[in-house]
Length: 156
Image (cartoon, rainbow, N blue to C red; front, side, top):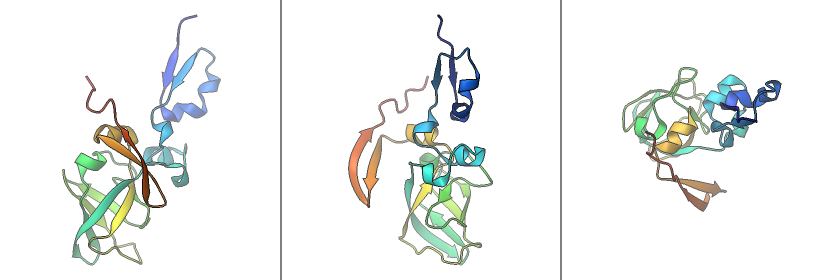
């Protein structure tokens, strides 16, 4: 029997309905991300990857600047934002340049301070993984593991 391969995390919930498939390859499924949340395939609690960012500026009362831009978070958008800040769920990362994320805090009751670290659930974990040399396994604020991203930059 020839291999008939299907892919895409969104298809993981319906692949059993395609009898011709002999395998399924779902990349984002291991981490989940904001695309998965938006598509209804995962919840925020299912999202295992976060990017740590630091608030480096507060130019106005309702804005913050993060040290993570498109070189860290990738340029993907979903639901009018570039990721979900776990500590400030009402915040919106509305713009990225290469090195910085621009955050609208106008809907937040509590607002971050300069120097505060935040965890961002990325829009697209596949791309974010490829932008970094290592992933860190963190539990209770302690780095327990470091994994090299073996295929980083090897897209041809």
